[in-house]
Image (tube, rainbow, N blue to C red):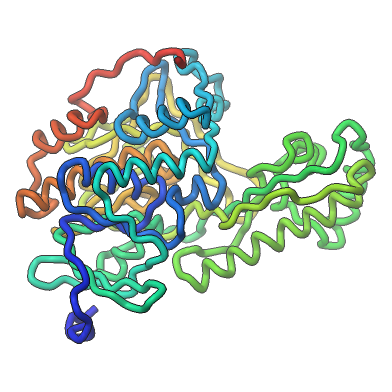
Length: 443
C-alpha cells in the first residue's frame, strides 16, 4: 500500500509493538511484549479475546506435554493454570502418557468465559492497550516503521508501530504489507461446533437411525461430511450431544467475503443435521442448544518465512539452531472431500521444534507471524496449528518483537542467545536451552 494514499489521515497513536488478532497466539504475544516493557496494542475484530477457543468454541487446548514431559510452559500455561484455579478447567494427569491414537486425552477442556476473562486481566496487567472492534484496512512501511490503517466503529484511524505481529491466522497483515504467502492446493475443511439436547439417547433405535440415514443421504438431505466416520452415522454425535465431528468443505476463510460463505455453509450443515435427526425415533424433540459464533477455520494462507518447517523436519524432531519453542501434536490433515482425517502419531520421544525463522516473513525486518500462519508445509502446519503450539509461537513472537523494538534492530538480526534468555526469564521452554522435567500430576 502506498503511503501517499493515507497522508491525509492524522496519526492517532504510536506503539512499540502492535499485535493484530486477539486469539490463541495473539493474546499471548501481546502479554509477552507488554511484560517486556514494550508499549503494546492488541487489535481484535471481536469484542472478546480468545479467538477460535472462544468464538469458535474449540475450547480444549493441547498439547502441552509429550512423552511424560512438559514441553510448553510460559504465559500460555500460566493462563491455563489460572483458569483451573478459578474452577474453569480440570487438568488431566499428564504424568500418564496418553494411549496410542488418543492424543485428545491430554487436551484440557476450559470454560470459555473464565478463559477470556483471564486473558483480559493478563493483558491489562501487562499494560496492553486493547483495541476491540477494529480490523486493519491497509498497511505500509514508512521511515523504518509499520503504519496500519485500522477500521473501527467511528471510521478509519492511523497507528504506527516499530514492529507488528500478524496473529490473524490467515496472514492478513502480512498480505497487506506485501509479504510473500503460500497456500495448499486443497484447503482443509472447517468445523462449526454445536450441541444438541432434548432427546434420550437410550431411546434411539440404531437400526432405524441407520436405515433413515441411507434413505436421506440418497436424497441429498444429509451429507457424509455432516458426521464422523462410523458404522452407524450420527450415533457418536448423539452419544456426545454434538461436538466437532462435521466438516464444512470447499471453503476459504482468508477474506471477509469467503469467510462469510464459510459461516453460511456451516449453519446450513447444522440445519441439515437438525432436520435429519428429528426424524429419528427417540429424537422427535431434539433441539440445537448451541452453535459457535464462528466456523472454525483450519487452514488458509501461511507466510513464506526465512525458514520453513516441513513434515519431515517436524516428525523427525529436528532441533533448529534458532529454535524458540517446542510443538507437539500428530500430523492431523482433515480431508477436503470427505469426513476422514489423516492422523499420523509421532514416534516415541520425538519433540518437534519451531525456529524463529518460521515466524519471520522472508526478507522483512519489522514483521513477525504467530499461530497457524507461520511458515510450513500443509502436513507440518496441520500439527503446529493447535492451541498450545500457537501459544508458544505467540510468546516467542512477542518476545522477539519487544526485543527488536528495544534494540532498534531487524527481527532477522536478533541475538539468539539474548532472545532465548528472555523467553526463559518469562517461563518458556526453549529447545536446546531449557531442561525438560517430568510432567507432574494436577494440583
